[in-house]
Image 1 (spheres, rainbow, N blue to C red):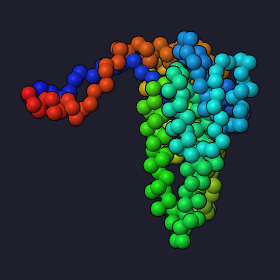
Image 2 (image 1 turned 120 degrees about the horizontal axis):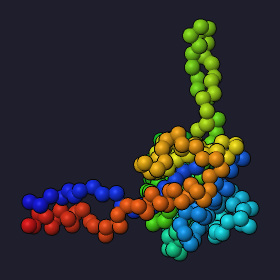
Image 3 (image 1 turned 90 degrees about the horizontal axis):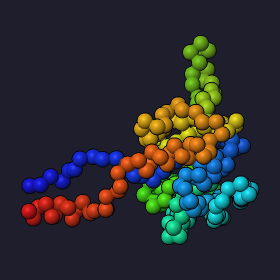
Image 4 (image 1 turned 90 degrees about the vertical axis):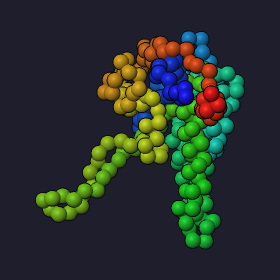
Length: 253
């Protein structure tokens, strides 16, 4: 029987990047500076949940925009699919945090569902809302365009016991993204932006080009060219195939 396996090859790929930072760090500007310089001659669409903040940079960068006034994960899915249908090369989501904390976002949907339940059961509410958020994650991973998202960050604290006093104390440990825990690991490139607009890479799959811990001051065109060069250096993608059809074909041999 012929093997279902094939030799692994690195193919050309689409960017999946997340830029995380607090208010004022320059997440929107950085996403535009990288996104509009990523694909030579490419068209860029911004899915805006920040009350038009991206359009403040319309004189600096060339892009189209779509404003979302409701932030259900499925609204994001519809917007990304619209950008795919219109042939954009790069989609910027500014910001992804609203799919979690925004109007009609995941948390608000859970709260409303729990309020309607006589028992106030949030577990049942999450059972209904989680598939919607999962659908958004699946769309971002599989979308036909390059994708850059911005994610707000908040100060994170932990409670721990002081061994000397025996008392529980609150300790600041840094910044945490405002989104579902672990969502940043779905992206191929993740960077934290500080208030001086310095991007520090925390996760990367761009092997040999960008490494964890790399720092980019005011990232823009140079970083975009580095990313795009690596993405396009792989082999031409093979036509999509159905694994089930492959299995049947092999079994019939």
